[in-house]
Length: 192
Length: 192
DNA sequence: ATTAAAACTAAACGATTGGTTAGATAATAG
DNA sequence: CTATTATCTAACCAATCGTTTAGTTTTAAT
Image (cartoon, rainbow over the protein chains, first blue to last red):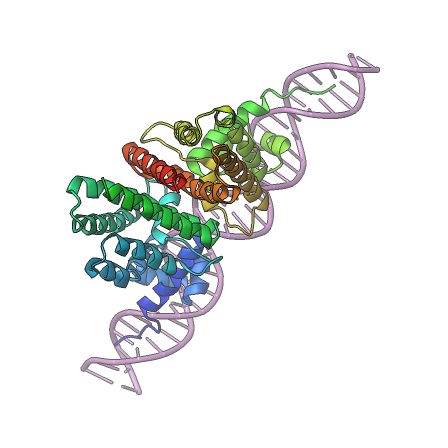
């Protein structure tokens, strides 16, 4: 009774995600989305409502890319070392050396004006909070008090955002150094 | 033999700097610059050539705001503690809690596409390199080897960029915690 | 007072932004 | 085969972007 659309939402969103990730939200125009997603504005608006709609779908797709890393962290047994490994896993997700795109959530959070775009901010906040809880739980499994665990988790959240930013700007060895020193600091912190 | 302009370059640049700092380069339009600087587009273009020209002048003005902090760090005698104090001094420059604008250089570096805007990237890189050298020199005064000093300086550069980003997003106590743990890590690193 | 140069106002430039829509096309239910 | 309905193309919308320019006003040396 009607024509079938000749694209899959998940496929065109995958392309949009890559584009937003490399270009940022503001530096990605509808025209560029058209050519990259391979469908035109009408179809984009029909499927996703707005540019922000495309972006929100992209953020969800981006989050999904982390699911195996999340599960790995959640169920592994090596304590703080698992969190460190999670940092390296994320670094891999950000892309190869010299072409690292950083973390899409972190990139966006620093580029979006807080007053507008509330839906986007909320999605990012939820992503951050989830990791904070994961870190905190992992630390408490090591017999760290809840208060201390949350304190260190907050430190790690900031450190992880640093890794995202640094991976875009600094050589990979410096990023590795940063991670190593960061977890040396955490391990030292756990001894008192 | 000619009309005098009724504004001072340094004064209108001070206003532009504040605007760029709060809004970012891309989110600051010429119209907004007009109303904020209090002169119109003709005068802006006559004095600074382009939007990028205004921005470059703003970056220089921003750098000047750090001169006393730079001098303080350069000539103080407490070693690593001076670098830590420098972090706190910069945090003060970024603005009060809840309204922190972060570091204009760091903000910009993460928002500008590396391929274009080379002049801007270079100005930022120079600002970063200068601090790296300051950190390294300070560490070598503590009898740290040059190689080790540069390694720690690189770590501190990334950490300082974290402080900038975090100050915009996280509560001030978490930023303070981050700085404290960072310098605990550095001091621990210096003991081996 | 005349003249020339610089600074001003304000309108306009072409390009691009996010978003919309009329009409052609295709697919399926009856 | 026809009617229906969703999807497509492609042109278009008003608004805004950074930049330029024509025309007017102010200043100061002659």
